[in-house]
Amino acid sequence: MREYMKFYIDGQWVDPVTPKSLDVINPATEEVCGHISAGSAADVDKAVAAARKAFETFSQTTREERIDLLERIQAEYQKRFGDIAHAITEEMGAPASLAQRAQAPIGIAHIATGIAVLKEYKFEEDRGPTRIVKEPIGVCGLITPWNWPINQIACKVVPAIATGCTMVLKPSEESPFSAILWAEVMHAAGVPAGVFNLVNGLGADVGAAISSHPGIDMVSFTGSTRAGIEVAKAAANTVKRVAQELGGKSPNIIMPDADLPSAVGGGVKHVMQNSGQSCNAPTRMLVPSGKMDEVIVIAKEAAESTTVGDPNGNAQIGPVVNRTQWNKIQKLIQAGIDEGATLVTGGVGRPEGLDKGFYVKPTVFANVTNDMTVAKEEIFGPVVSILGYETVDEAVKVGNDTEYGLAAYISGTDMTKVREVASKLRAGQVSINGGGGDMMAPFGGYKMSGNGREWGDHAFTEYLEVKAILGYTPKQAAE
Image 1 (cartoon, rainbow, N blue to C red):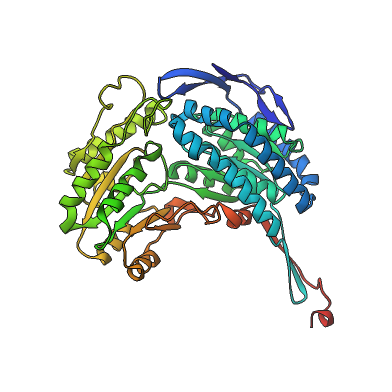
Image 2: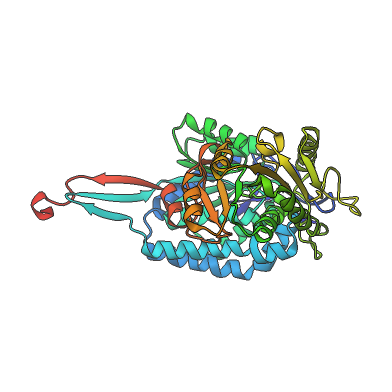
């Protein structure tokens, strides 16, 4: 049983202003596996005060000092790698294999990428007589989700530190263990007091206090579109910058010349990974209508070969994060059935042999139309919707016919046509033939999927203000 009842503020572990605890539930067992403290606006006030004080000096550190700090963080993270991976499995149900090969390693990848970018990043440039300077924006409020907990913490904290900002982090109350371990890493690495602060709690309390706080200069939020809208509203009165990475309903266009076994099978497996709890998952598969029957056979085999079970065992996917999510997914699967989509495999209820835990059957719907609920709503579970198209132009139109625009996917052998389709898709990131894994590629969405970009050098922009110093270079010297 884990007991994490303190917050990390101003370089030390402190008690909450008003004691109040939250249960943390292991989604595989449905049992309490730990407790954390639920913070309040008063705790946020303390964290912001510490961050504002620290900003005075940390914002003036040199590039070399911040590189050294990130390298120390990287070394300490390596020491705690196993602990972090284990915590992720316990708190949100990621299979141990996934936690070891993806969930925990991506933290190291973000730190390494941040170091590489910082070494070469141009914070100043001269344009004639004017010097353009990029300066740290100030105190940052970071609000992160539970589905890829360390990924979202690292891709915010690293660029904030690299650019000289200070911060207050509110991780998800569903996945607080890995965040606590991250704070321990920061402390062991010698991050100056007040630069990094962590306050646990609920979004309605801590998240709202961060979003509206006049002492916070920007908010970076990852989560649902609904919650992102609330964050933006709360931030509006203080005119702070808001960067959002929100929901998605990403199209996966299988071109007529694509290798179906690879494209369809790979697309289904991609959705199933992490129990379907990835905002960029290719959940709407668009296939040539004439090949629907062949696609169904391939998709069925891919889904049914996905093993579900104890995340500490050999199962490929574990449970979804909590009962609320499980219930939501069940309702959406039932909606697909009720609205006339073809249930290829899966369906409502737990997989056979699993009587406890928030497990969902790997589910595939075919003959879906884009007006159906399963084609419109982000399900955030292991559910694939297959839609037919007559022409590639129709596939592009249907692919773009969504309020979201986070990601899109295309499979095909004619690269000229594939690239043409990629240019027409309204999404922040488009993957061709399984291309992915580029830590420098900007990540973020169009439309209701958010604004701003994370990862690589584009992430730095979110944490910097731009200052123009006119007359910096005398006119004659500039000429």
